[in-house]
Amino acid sequence: LRPSSIKYTIYLGKYSFESKLNTLQLIISTEVSSNKNDICSNKELDPSNDNNQDSLLSEDYLKISLGHLYLYGRFIKRALINNITPTLISNKMLNETMEKDSNNKANSYIAIQIPYYTESIVIDPDFSILLDNTPKSTGICSTNSSKLSTNKIIGIVLGSVGLAIVIILSTLYILYKRKQKATLQNKIKNIQMDQR
Image (cartoon, rainbow, N blue to C red; front, side, top):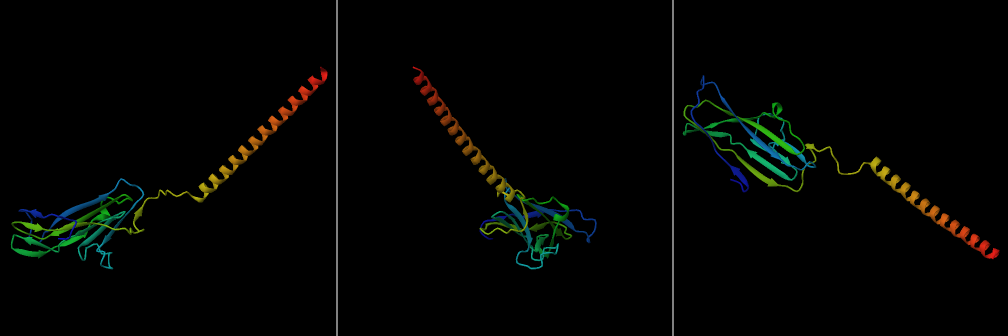
């Protein structure tokens, strides 16, 4: 078991199959979510394998990322049937028909195909939670950007320049009026003094 892993065992008792050719499908749901909106979510099947397009998990690994948090799921290829025989099982992604991912939530639905059994079956998957400082830019990301667009920057600059011009012209006008008023008052004083 790897460090930082979540380990559990799935035990199923007797099940009434209609035929020995029938199988049982156990669906496991995994969700990683965050209340931050400015992050990306991504999902990869078997990150070590280049052929990730196959809906069957060839190496039984799933990697879900949300920002810097990565959840690795490993599904064992064998199950213990009737407490005797380790038997091959397969896993299949069901995401195409299930809930869609968003920038702050990633879901994964995996169907474990269980063959016919009579008494019980034991399945032993595990999940690892890892932190990574190099998040991928692929995946589903928020369309909200905290950066200002070019139009917004131009608008802010023009608005600031316009406001500065209005302040400067207003200040000059007030100073001109004060000077004109002072000159007029001086002329009135001089006329009054001349009349005395």
